[in-house]
Image 1 (cartoon, rainbow, N blue to C red):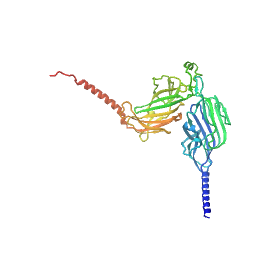
Image 2: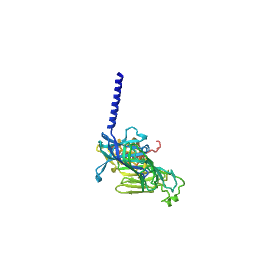
Image 3: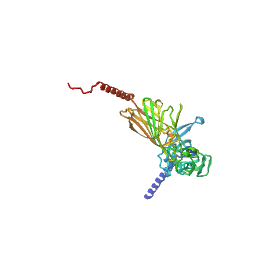
Image 4: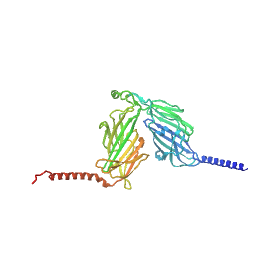
Length: 469
């Protein structure tokens, strides 16, 4: 009798536990994607993906976040990830940015990386919303063949999935891939699939479960400049006497298919439409307005092959390296210029000074593997802090220049895998006592005064040896 009672008690305990688990699972939030539209742009060396998700809360409790999944190769090359939600209709529509962070959920299957998009307001049961996602991938286009001659075009591979990798059930989805031209050698067919001009279209697909993946490869021609800055060191020097000096040190590389054979300058000059089609010899740089004192030089000296166009809204600098760049070739150079201080240095409400400048690389459609921004503050600055809209590594160091006594505090910001979408303003705040502005003039005045005193003493003192009496 005792054993029967114990067995019944264990059975009831297990039954209640199972019922609690089932109840917990049934009441947990459940999201499904009603429609997913993915537009992939690979016309440039940088791949940009625009994703529109219409999600519905099919569970019984509120949902405050939406998860976005990336394959391991995508997560490795992910440069930036943004999300927003549209408010209003038609011409009055505005996009409100949403917070995006790596997800703390358990590891997804096959090493997929999850990111959490926080909604502005919790999504109630039965409600739906549309989330716009933009993410940028670098070093994802693979040259094939890996080596080409001077007159050959450049072909690349792009690898992805015809279906969206997602932790949710997707009712309907479609994927389009835009290439630079209609010169597509081949592409994987996952029916329904079609190609119209320079655009490949996969789908629509219906009723795909979570983490569905259909690998595809697109082989196409892409002769756009594969300009990659392996290392960029930017120095921003603040002078309270009215000047802002910028110095950019570049290590540039053509990251496309490597050049093979011998380079013929004669063929390159007379057959430019065919010879060197995958190379580049011009780069365009966007600079702030009212720029002045621009110089462009390398280890040999000044490079005169540059053109500067200035108007009231922007400045554009077109530079030409000493030689055209083919696949695998590199160039090292420095670009510097000055800017009016009043356009970038301001005073906050609490009396602190702050610099407002653009982060990133000014070269158009160029990725940077390793970027270092050094903000050199005036001597005597204290308590510097940096406000950057994305994660960066930062530390302080001291920089010494002419007539410095204690050195200048320098804020160093470092970031890898930088793309044009990182060209957003950042701020550096610091405290400064105006008395330090007179330190260098007083040193110069004192030096000149001591020099004249020494001259007067030398003239009036008789250092000759007289005869003894």
